[in-house]
Image 1 (cartoon, one colour):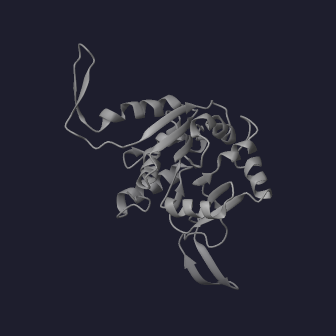
Image 2 (cartoon, rainbow, N blue to C red; image 1 turned 90 degrees about the vertical axis):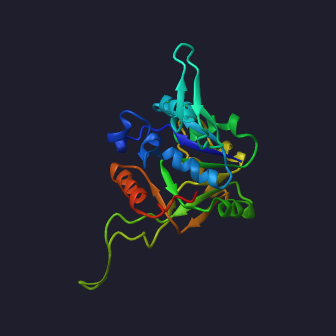
Image 3 (cartoon, rainbow, N blue to C red; image 1 turned 120 degrees about the horizontal axis):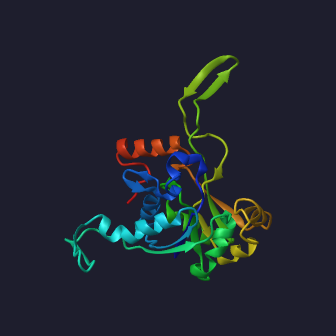
Length: 257
């Protein structure tokens, strides 16, 4: 099974980092968040990726082209340009297709442009800016059991502010930034059948709007409820939170490999 990753957006809310690189290349713990996402999928045996590039896609290409040597001691023959890796550094067993899906293409359009590389079979899809400890095997079992075209992972994100339980004007409970107790949001981590591509009209289609709305109206969209860790990286605050968790938590909550 292949996993498609959308990595082409501009990431304007994280401009401190994305002026020089696409958001999936912003580092957490010395590695791009894209690497963390692929490590998660790889831990469940999913090692074929199709990455939709757009804004500064060449940075992602260069990172993966250089990955063979980045973690190794190397010997360079300056006259011939030959590079030899010294020792046997650990290698990721990934096959990654890097597809230019256009600079201005919307999320649905990017997915549709990946169609020739996904094959006529079930595939997974996620964004290139969020991490989780979602059990991908359980997610896939859920998807196959209900027989619909699309499954999204529903999550309850951490609240941004302290939660208050009030009795009149009296605070009877205070929780400092707990997980949201009510309401579910789309946390990505989709499992999709190839027929969902028929719900996407073209490059201007936003996946989260008309396609998902139509799938829901047609009774073809199901939600897998994930109660565990989930965190996107939309802002510098989110990036610093993930960095803190990677440094201080043992282990970091999304590190399941």
